[in-house]
Structure formats: C-alpha cells, structure tokens
Amino acid sequence: MKVLVAGATGQVGSRLVRQLLDRNHEVRAIVLPDDPAASRIEGLEIERMEGDLRDETLVEKAVAGVDAVIHTANFVSGAQFENNTQVNRVLANVCGKYADRLERYVYVSSSGVFPNNGEVIACAYHPVDELHPKRPLGDYNISKILGEHFTESVAYTTGLRTVIVRPSHILSGTAILHQFSVRRVCGILRTGQRNRGSELYMPDGTELWHQVEAQAESEDQPCSVRDLEGRPWYYQPNDARDIAHGLICALEEPGAVGESFNLGAPAPFTFPEAARRIAEATGQEPLEIRLPVRWRYDHDIRKAKSWINYRPQGDLPTMIASALRVQSEGWQDYTWE
Image 1 (tube, one colour):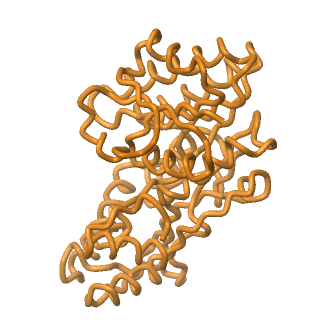
Image 2: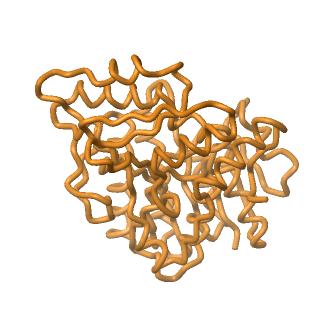
C-alpha cells in the first residue's frame, strides 16, 4: 500500500514512517520548506514532496496516486487554531474527492477532546473511554474536535473510509523522566486551584502546592503522591512509538473503519512507582506526600486492544529505560530495541 503521511517529520510521524517501511508499505511525505525537523526522516527510502498542507492544490497532488492517508500533522505554536483547522479541513475535503479509491483516511485527534485529566474540568467518570462526553478546552483541543467533525462529515457525504485515533499525552526522548517531579505536581495543583470545576479545586482556597514545596529538596525531586486514603495519583501517557503502532492498526485492520479509538500506555503509571523507579535510576530520594485531592489521568484502551489488535509496548519500566538510554547515549528512540 502507498501511504501519504501528513506530518512525517513530527514526533509521531517520524516513527510512523519507519514502521510503515518495516511493514513493506510505500511512503509519500509532505515536508514544509526548511523544516527544522527534516533530519528525522533523512536517509529513508520515501517519496518527499515539499509544501504547505494548507495549500489545497498541493494536497490534491499529494493524495493523487496513494492508497491511504494518515494525518498526524499539527502546528504546536503560533496561530494554532487557524492553521490546524485549515489543515484538517483541506485534508478531509481532498480525501473525500478520492473516496472511491482511498482505502483509508486516518485522522489523529487527541484525548484533549474529552479532556481526560480533570485538572481544568472534572471528568464525567474514570477511566475515560470513547463514549465519554466531549468538552474540549482551548484552541488546540477545539481544533482537534473540529478535525473530527470534518472527518465525519466527509465520511457521511462521500463514503470515505475513515478512522479517528485519540492518543493521550505523547512522550518521546527523555520526557517521561520529568513527569513525576515536584515541579509537575505543583503545576497540576496550581492549575486545579485556578479552575473551580476541576477535580483538584479546594473550596476553602487552600493552595496545596505550598505544602509540597515546603517538604521538597528541589523542584526536580521525584514525587510520590497519594491522597489521604492512600490511593495513588496516576498518569497514562503514550509513547510516540506506540501511537505509530496504533496508526498502523487503524490503517490495516478491517474493523477500524468508521470507528474512533483511544490510544495510551498499557496501563496507568502510579506516581509512587514512577517516583521510586526514577529515584533509583538517578540516585535521588523521592518525596512521599499525601494530599486531600487525587489527580487521575487515564485513557481506556480496551476497544483498541480488542478491535484493532493494539499492543502498546511502552509500560513504565520500558519508557524509563528508553529515556535513560537517550539521556546517556544520545540514542534516537525512533524504534523499539
């Protein structure tokens, strides 16, 4: 199959391209002129087209002659809403014109359309699955839900075979090592206290982060957090390599068409376990603390596992080991080793 990858130089796209090639697919990639991340796909046997995804004429040329399109592209700074919305609209509409011969159009949305972290607005329930109410907040997440609507609208009107994929927080490189620190915990608490509808809001105005800061040795200290009942805080991110694998599943599995799927780590990572493992690896002593609130960031992936054979490898020990290798050796974590 010949696959057009939009966003091929991105965190997910650069890993997706390699997995497509490993599975004997041909790849066509659209790359921005002077893309600073172009080195991520240098030396790969792919067809490169240079241009801007907001250019409908360019996108029509790119879609012509391919069998499927996977849209991973995002503008992550600047005028996110306008740019992302334009890209999402153009790609969906152009793919709709080729609906009679495209095998699949896979759109990468985000768990932020729910959202699933509870620090700004409380989740309706946990774990967050595909049926959870969608209440996106902020330009980026609103652009993602609009992208879903563009995708569904074109599917309804043209018969385009579509799949919507919603990854949770995407990590690569050394990022996992910084997700369980005092700094991160204090940031979550500050956000929760700014938002009355959050799961972390203290009606009496207590600023819980001061308690954490007062006991911490530094902002970088691993932080083992539980609530007053002893229940751990937890977090379910997504290794970029696993998202790429999930997109392959969405591309190849017949049962994916017309559906949406959550992607995340095999199971949530608890702060106590993560703090302990990171402390052991870095020689630090974890801060153990209990708070009257509980942060839960989860993403139910049972549908993806049962419907499209999604099998993520990025559990907590594996992701930490990979990040330490990146940190110590300068290794590029494009593939699993």
